[in-house]
Length: 273
Image (cartoon, rainbow, N blue to C red; front, side, top):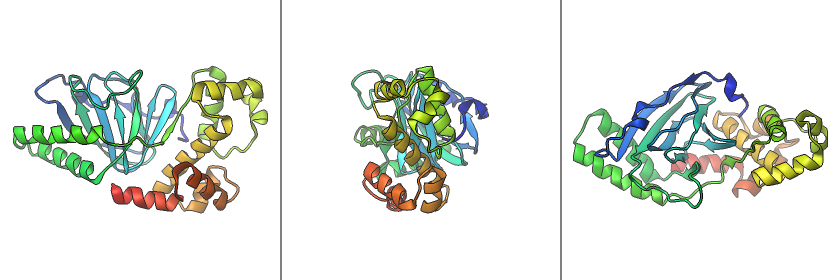
C-alpha cells in the first residue's frame, strides 16, 4: 500500500478470464506474481476468485483497496474493473467462474469482497489446479468445481477493505497517506496538501468512505501493518513503520479492529490457510 499504482510494472490478465465456453463453468489457473508487479486494470466476463498461496495481495477496484493475506480470498464479480498487486513475490491461484453461474448474490451493484478462506476450499482449489495440470478426467474436474462453488457461497466476508473516494481533494490526501502511513500530522495540518479545509475533508471522508478521517487512517495503518507483518517484520517494527508511537498503542488498535492481537491474527489465519 506504499507505492503508487502508476509506478508499478503492469502485465496482461489471464486469457482464461475471457473464455466463454459454458461447458467449463469453473476453471482454475495458477500464476506467480513477482514483487513490485501488477496485473493492469481490467474486467472480464468470468467472475474471479484469487487466493495467494504465499504472500499478501492487494486488490484495487475503483477507489477501494482490499488486502488479501493467504488466509483469505478476494471475489471479483464478472464485469467489475479491478487490479491485483503484490509488493512481495506471491504464488496465486485463480478460480474463474462462467457468467451463466450465479455466485454470491449481492444487493446493489456488483462489488469486490474479501472472504475468509477455509481449509476445505484451499485443498479443493489446490486439487483442481493439480487435476488441470494433469489434464485429468473432465467429469471429475467439473464435479469438484461444483463443490467449490457451493463452498464459495458460504464463505463469510472479512473486514479487510479500505474504501476510497473520487473527489480530487480526498484522493490527494488518501494517496499521500497510502504512501506515508506514518505521517502523524493532524487533519488541520494535512488540509493544505489536499487543497481543502478541515471541515470539507471531514465531510468528504464521511460521504465518500463512510468513515471518519480518524477511523480511515487507523484502518489504512492496520491493513498496511498486515502486509508488513506477513513479510516478517516484528510487531514493534510494524507499529513504528505505520505511525504508532508505541507497540502497545498499535496492538490495542489492532485488537479493536480485528478482535485479537496481530500475532495471534496471523497465526490463526495461517493455520486456517
